[in-house]
Length: 120
Image 1 (cartoon, one colour):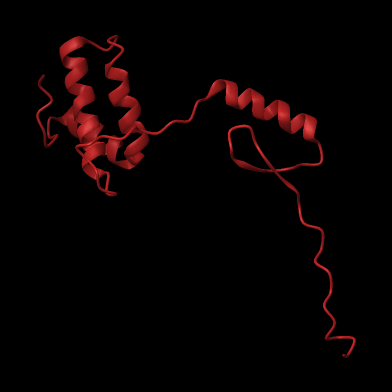
Image 2 (cartoon, one colour):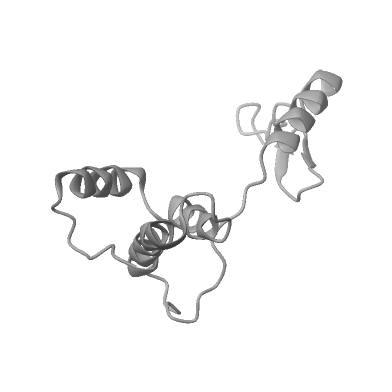
């Protein structure tokens, strides 16, 4: 076997750890700084997606997104913005809908051209 055909060892690869939340994370050289930064972020935010809805069993969640958007505005029209159960609809549409869609729908609501009734 010639010198150029020899297999060379791979350069050292970064090490990874499994975080407490089950995500794969790069193990940095300064673990202490990284850990404290991660704990600060994880204490501020709880990432969660919309739960299963039997009305929308398929992979395409477009209608699920739209339904939660309209349900939120119907709910706040009927019960007011301080009614806590309405916030579940908002969390769901924020999770499911692309931001561009909600921005467009907000503009349509303000101009009176939204394609659905938002009356309770």
